[in-house]
Image (cartoon, rainbow, N blue to C red):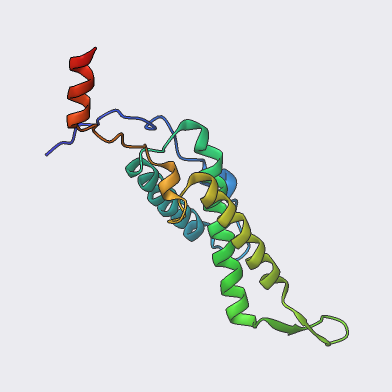
Length: 148
C-alpha cells in the first residue's frame, strides 16, 4: 500500500536540524530531547495545518515554541527532583531554585509563541477564516426590485 502526498499550504516547512539545536549533553539526554522535539514539532504542525493557519513564516515561531516546551519539561523535572526551595551553595540559606525561574520563563515564552500562532483555545477563533453568511431574500427585497 502506498500513499500519495497531496501538496497543500504549508507543506514547504521543513523540520529544524535538532542535532544542531540540541547538541551532545554530558547526561546523554540529547537523543530523548531530539525525539521529544520531533514529536512536538509534528503535533504543532498538524494542529496548524488542521486550522489552515500553517505558513512558511511560522517556521521560527514553531521552533521557538518547541524549544520552550523542552526547556519547561527539563526545568520542571529538576524542580520536582530538587524542590522549589534549595539551600544556597555557600551559606546554605534557603533560596528559590533557579530551575523554578527557568520553568517560569519557559512557560512565558511558550505562552507568547502559542498566542502568536493562535494555538491557545481562546485565540483559535481569531485565526480561522471568517465564514460569510448566506443572504436570505425577504419580501422587502422583492418590493424594492419591482419599483426600480
